[in-house]
Amino acid sequence: MNLEEYLPVLLFIIVGATIGALPLVLGWILGPTRPDPAKNSPYECGFEAFDDARMKFDVRYYLVAILFILFDLEIAFLFPWAVALHDVGLVGFVTVLIFLTILVVGFAYEWAKGALTWE
Image 1 (cartoon, rainbow, N blue to C red):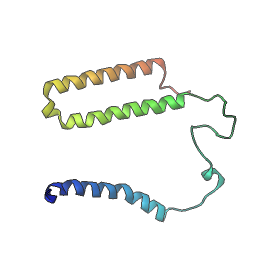
Image 2: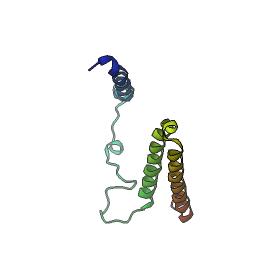
Image 3: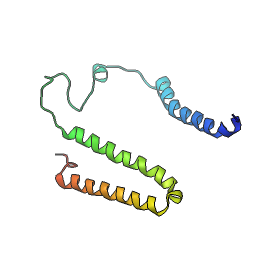
Image 4: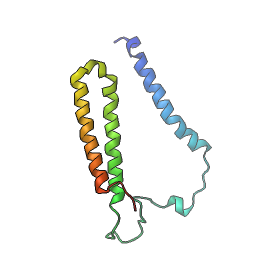
């Protein structure tokens, strides 16, 4: 095992972990600590949790969250494809066009059904 080959990967991991941990540590050290009952109360799903467990709630809250995750994952699929576009050639390009077409059709369907409107 040659350490020089893995040095860029290790450096990337160290820099990434530092960038991820540094704001958390700085916020914990420098941030004010003024707890009150509202800050310490549990917040779960967009409505008060102190009522009856069988109460009616708005499902659109969950629908918007699921749609956000769906379109966020679509972007996660596009980044590796964009990096490897030269290697995948025309077949990879057409495959991603089909993927995006299906995604746009689904988005148009959701929009037409009113899933993205909030009253």
